[in-house]
Length: 432
Image (cartoon, rainbow, N blue to C red; front, side, top):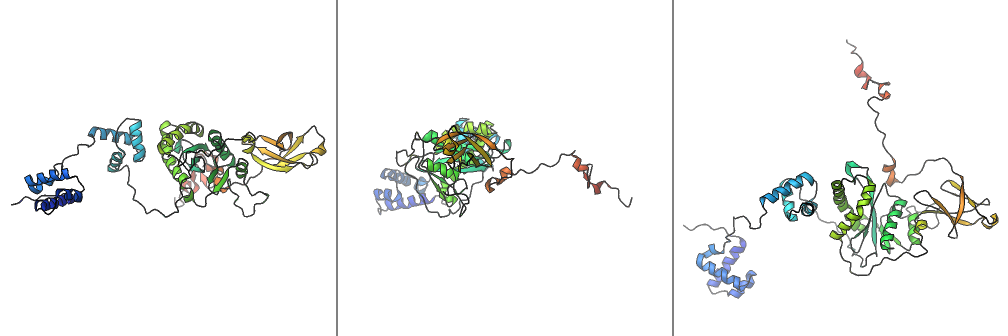
């Protein structure tokens, strides 16, 4: 009785080719072209077929372990480290840590298979991607810089929730600035933009969302003539264009970068034990350099579109909150509910009805400019603090829920509470 042979589809195709060669219906050169192998390999296969028949075409390695299989000890060592230190890491990041920190040479796909087998990683089901119009990267470094703020628990339970300001170059995908701030504000973006401009120069344009910091969202803004926000005015003075995206998909590069940062940066901060914004900002340059080394790409053009600051561009003045006012007959001007009295050696009539600019920086320091020259002044009147309008995006940061009373708080003994328990639980039963 003939013995049953198990063959793959490729081996069955080769068997058919060998039979046709034997019957002189196919040349060895034609068989090599049909099978996608060399004529020399066809000759070896035909010799094996003539000696052993169909069995000679079956791989001798079938059913045997691979010569390139991982050592069981290395697999166990990698698994122990992943469970101990990198349990919630993704396979890619866990593979990088095993190679860089522990010098364990295991491929990324091997780490993925190990984590899937242990139930530590669930392979994601591929979704049908939504169709969006593709926008090609800009050609030059500094031609377009995407900016955004990512509110996230960056320090997990070790520290307060805060916002990371992210600046990423569109042409290269290079992180240009990272900066932890309590929330997205005008002064926060001014500080991050100062770091970017002082390090690289002025970009051609910033690409942002439609946050009120970048764009006046009221149809007819009251009390404004230029229609610019404070940040828009500052960028206009620096000759930097602001482009506001209509959808998150339009600035997908920085949105994807935020997702990557919320995974990688959070875990790096955890490994280093960093739990506050000050220590986090000190570490961010090192993380930024490592991120760019891994993910940045070369631009199509070698031209750097960043421009140097001009001698007339004073960032301390430009990146401040400015309000234009008119001096009264008494040389006073009001800004932010404060009345400032200008001091001058010249006669009062020379400055009456003069247009001045009141500039206030993040520290609350005020400068009053007249024709770009500072004026000395004193505070004439400063009212008590009043209620302020809070932006809806920062409402959660401004509003803090009150803590519940302590167990020994006197409130628990008042009215319907007695000794920390509802009064109906302390009263005797009426039937007793």
